Image (cartoon, rainbow, N blue to C red; front, side, top):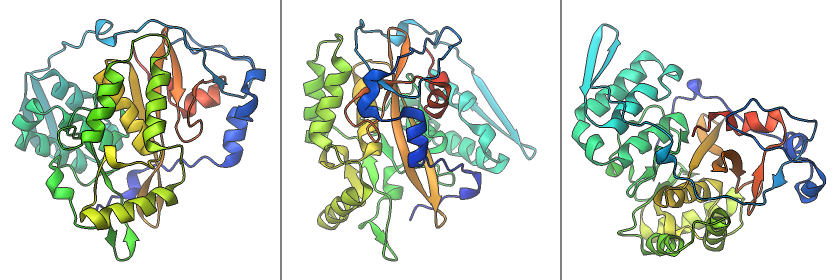
Amino acid sequence: MLKSNTSDTQSIKPEKSFWNTLFGDSSSSEESESIKYDINTQIQTNNTTTANDVEINYESHNLDDDIDKTTNIKDNTNTIHGKIIIINSQNNLLNNFINTFCKSTYTDDIVRSIYIEISDNQELYETESFRISNLKYRLCNSLSNYEKINDNFFDIGYNNIAYSTNLNEFKHDNIFEDNHQLREIILFDPVKDSILRSIYLQTETFLKDNNIYNKIIEIIINHLGKETEDFKFNKFMADYSSKNKSNVLYIGDAYCGVDRHKSLLFKYICDKLNLPCYIFRNITTNDNKIYDNHVWNLICIDRCVYIVDFKTFSHKIVKATDIDTENYYKINQFLI
């Protein structure tokens, strides 16, 4: 069973009134005046409280052209409790992770354990980039444009005591422990997952025009369904685990996925197509267990940030129209 230390977590659980305050009735969104969030300016808002559907009109934007990612810190030194751990690497992705992950939210002992995990398996982290994103998403609940969901990525949920990126260490032959259904492991493996491979090949044919994000959303909804209720997925997963004798779910098999599956698949496809996309996860605790409470994506169109939220707006692209919405969705963290 995957267990986490919940003392370091923050529970964010929006109630219905919260959503009403932010968005009002989404079905009447056309009545409100929209405001675009321009990441280069300080936004000024009016008093509107809804999120509006987006009319997409943009040219495809390759973020790799906008940032210098060549910063190479050869000596990453971490001194904790008098013990020095040095990781020397020429790998920019690994260096960036070591220097920018959310270490300030963790104790020195946890940070040291993370450094030891990387140091002991440095060659794997340098040659198999999915491991860096695995660890970043598990610890920090977010991945940016430059932190890709690559093939073989797997998600065990938030966990601040398990640092290995070896899938076999988390596998079980069932999804239950003490009559409690555990969190599934979501796996992206197009070699063994023919459905995932087929989904990506379909999106690969999409023109990078004004409508590409909508097309990706449509194909995800068509495959994973519009369901947002955990109990329906949990029933599916119980049957799936019993049939396959495993707690590992190939993402292509999840025909009734919820927001955590859809948002991960959305980012995976966007990353494959070099489209700007973030993923964020809010977590909540119950009976000392940690759950994915809400997962969503941010995208960038014409240097403005928009929201893809499969839980709240299952098949729409929306934009924030007030400060509370922007803060909740962490829009100011989107970097170009």
